[in-house]
Image (spheres, rainbow, N blue to C red):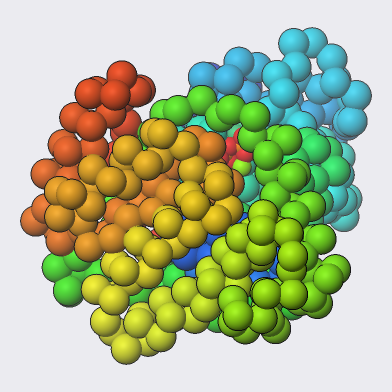
Length: 378
Ligand code: ADP
Ligand code: MG
């Protein structure tokens, strides 16, 4: 059964009727450009083939009822006033409704299904927000062309920032709504502008393996906030790190920790530009050393890796990956490895064995293929 069909079936089970439609939005993985969004840098995510689906039927009585496979029911008697057994996840949906404020909205029944790994750093949260946002936008006549989608993404980001309380920078939501099949999304975090960069791994015999380490996040909140403050402090002293250009210019920072943090941002932005050039030259094998350098920078200078992530990256490389790095905020979550398509099984096996030898959780795997952003799927 497809995820869209699962959402429709869940809708019928919970609400005893058919939805008006089903909308799907993808998870994402960031190829390169980590921890640079809040420095106004560049990043290069791609939308995954894994999606979250929202089956929706409007109501006119001010009632909002939500169900999601495996998450338990959430029912909101009157809009904005939770009652019954509320799971925390309802805040994502209520947040999207609040931030989007769709004209004429007077309630809805919504059933969710998903095959995006949850809490793995592949942005199941933005997939949920984007599926609901696109559904409500289409049903209430809001624009869903590209400028419209940029506005929807901004609303989804506000939902996560203001209603859920997670300070995400907008990359996830932009990718979930504006990703394009066969393309990575070059996102300028300073202006919000995007460019679609073709990515063709297959015809080069390559594949992008995603390793979900299944490691619990540890102290993520405090560490993430501290890294942001470090980058902001370096920016206060030097101006935008994007304009600094070279690490040599960071000599003005006397604090060695700040210098390393800023060094990551400066070199990571350069790596995004190098990755875009490699893709434009249709030379994706050049991404390998770029991923390796990004991992060293995140591990040694930004200090956001973990034993699980380092294990996955080292094992992937030793088993023949062209390059590998941790992705996402760090301290757990996922890693990516650029592999020859014929090596994918061997690399996955090596990563699994390495985790077992270190007594770490058993990793899970999926292949990243650059896929479309949110769309109506039934
Ligand atoms: P990530 O975005 O990396 O997967 P987050 O912690 O940002 O991790 O988001 C995960 C949270 O989003 C879940 O704990 C849940 O509250 C919500 N969520 C994501 N997908 C779903 C879903 N299919 N159904 C219900 N809630 C979901
Ligand atoms: Mg998230």
